[in-house]
Amino acid sequence: MHQYKGKLIMHTGSMFSGKTSSLEREMKRFAIAGYKTCAFKPAMDTRDKKDRITTHDKTYIEAVMVDSVKDIVKFVEENPVDVVGIDEIQFLGGERKEILEDINSLLYDGKTVVVAGLDMDFEAHPFEIVKDLMPICDYITKHHAVCVKCGSDAWVSHRKSDDTQRVVIGAQNEYEPICRNCYNLMKKNKDEQKR
Image: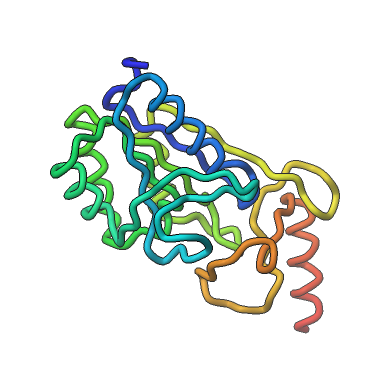
């Protein structure tokens, strides 16, 4: 797997699409191949234990909780790590420019970086850091959940509540995956009800 040295691998898409499962699978493959791996998760992701990243299927990998990519860079400087895994990249703190610089510094140092993150928020607006990372990725996989309304490929994570904050940590209790057509229909119906 030496061909991935110094490469950026991204898994993106809506919630329930398998992004974290793919991150977990990639990290386990690198570990089997003999690479020193370490996964990181944002401190604000409080859905599970602090020291693990857990998929919706309840499988997990051990992880280090961090506030920013700067924390990851510091950890990698102090510990032998070949492959860095980052879950929920959109929730890490810091300025976008700094995040990009820090990830590029890891890549420059020959580290493989595997990130997983939502491409859009519940209103179908792109998460800026994911949008910024896409063009510099060596490999990108866009994952799709199944639309709970019609069974098509899901496009966005629809928030079930009326909460308007951009970031609300949750899972099935807060969100459901829906396709573009169902999202547009729901949005149109909401807009008509407001009139």
